Length: 342
Image (tube, rainbow, N blue to C red; front, side):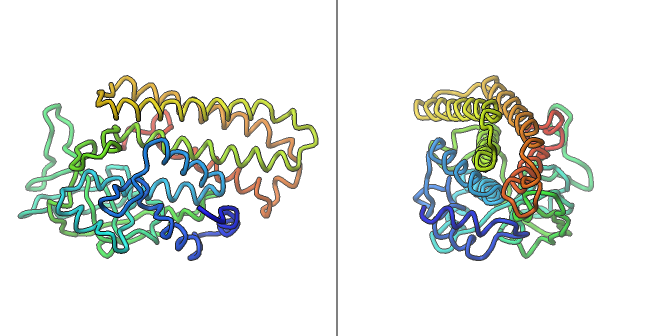
């Protein structure tokens, strides 16, 4: 990937990713980071992809976050039935997926499909994506379909952008250029072939053997690390006493080692066709959550001694700070975060 510094500069201070940046993302095929080469993608290994996402987040928080979430949604190609995957990912201007992890709507069984209704928060890259993914409770005759444990049956769905209404409510202090808007769906029919379930895969590639929650934890974790690295880099340019940054450096190095170490182990287990225990996935999640909290603590300790320049809206430190702490509001590493998400 060439001209990376220039790409980061183009993103600075924007409310939406510039056309030049979107064109560059498409040219580099980053939306399809995890998509198999057989379907026009880069087919990155887990560790290759994590390094790529980390480098993008270091350039610009919104850039890294958008590519992470949208390429992560394109990861769902592995969950789609073959005829749907072949139709959508045919190598010619492939789709860009994006969506919400929350269960905020309903899907009523009708004929060979479902009628979708609801409103979902939030979808990164809403203005750019061609297909929206969402989770909804399945209903028959107006009643929730229940699983054996008594909980509602939930499935994921893929809708074309024309079926979705974007709600422009992204008014945050940071990650502004991610354009992470809410969306609503009103009485839209979706063929059952465009319904899927996380962790049920139809493609054999190694990346799809990684449990989705582990995949989500690792790919978002590297974004926090990348943004912290950018914060450190910018802080070093204005700090006279660089020793104040030592604790932040140590936490970043520790985060990189742990994240990539888990990525390498997961990748090795997958290639050896070993089962990945749920307990190990929970360990990764807890380690990532602890790591993000440590990064947050160290950045907060450093920021008050950076001087007024770091508070100027036109200084990169200010944007990185706002981007990082906006990112911490994502549900994935929140103590209560998974209550309403898959």
